[in-house]
Length: 121
Image (cartoon, rainbow, N blue to C red; front, side):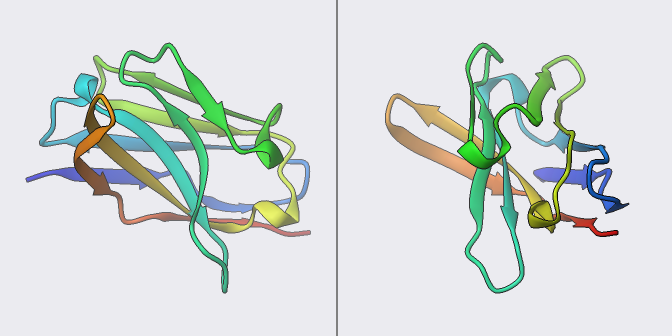
């Protein structure tokens, strides 16, 4: 059974930091590209950051570049999202996603249950 379990969300003031974790089980973690998505109330889910299976390539949505950092440890089956200089607009439910790809073909993907991040004074 595949599980992606996010943790680390919470309430933080603007300018603060949070570190989200996503622990994976039931998959060969090192074969999966990992991503963080977020969904604010009333809006569509958007890709925030991604990291390739080897950890060598990362991508970020423009709104978080320079503030968020995605990283992974394949030995610990865990991916993190370090979020600094948080803004009210970062308030959303954050979801972890795992993708197993071969070339351009997505062979499997899994979602976590989400963790809420609220940025408010």
